[in-house]
Image (cartoon, rainbow, N blue to C red; front, top):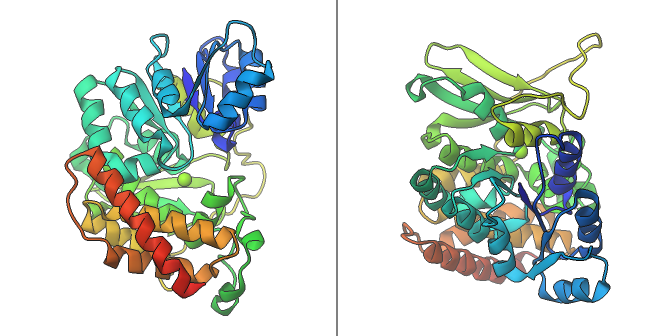
Length: 383
Ligand code: MG
């Protein structure tokens, strides 16, 4: 396998899974954005010959460091990631790079006939139409790594499409699920990056607190499982033990349960369709385990509603939602935007950017850039 985004949170969890299953999985290529010191260590630990550093300056530093084992082939930039995604020795490529950087490498992997394990949700949100078409054209499997989508994938296996009524993704509700609404005006970046259940990067932790993350996941699910927008819903489930519920037309529901750790969905994607011992203990039913479900309070989570609107609108709207959210969250994390202004920036950006149905990836990327400019212009009014 090839792992793009080896030094992030998903990357590190993936390495734990790989370490436990060295008899079945071999790492042949790894990439990181900037952290070349960690990348060199991974190359040594796993005997990886092909590495890539996305950031050119960090790539030059990596070459100069002399830290990589002799015989390592070091590539840089987007072309480096794309070459890695197409390595002849790889059967499966796991894309876990932040944001939209993984888009072209993901398409390249599918074009080369690889299976694609997807952790970066932006890829389907922006380019679901192109990714799904490329997978169909070349016969590659799409294996979700996001915990909720892995859960849906597991619940749907063996069930005909016509029998699915809807899927319900669970949301922890993030860091502020029990805060009174008045307090949300004073949320600091530090408050927003403490997630009660999951350990993740700062951007996705903020997205969990606003439920923008769950909105992006509905859009992701729509593409992965070929569903209509009204078939994709969410429920608050503070324990993050049940990752999805799938409701069938007869009213029966299947759920998938596992502890809140990414090693479970990662292992499922990498070993599919096989099962093997997990790297962490399963749930322990000899201890008290309470599971709660509550409806999503749409007043408290306006970003969730905006994502649903974008999903229903289709075309470039999901890409515009994603871009505006990224700009707003970065400004919030940088102390330049109040927490409650995040949905306002997204809402205004969705109205600013002219809607259309993209016919190429280039058109999507143009819409993404236009949305970033519009959102950046909107920031000033809310700072
Ligand atoms: Mg998720």
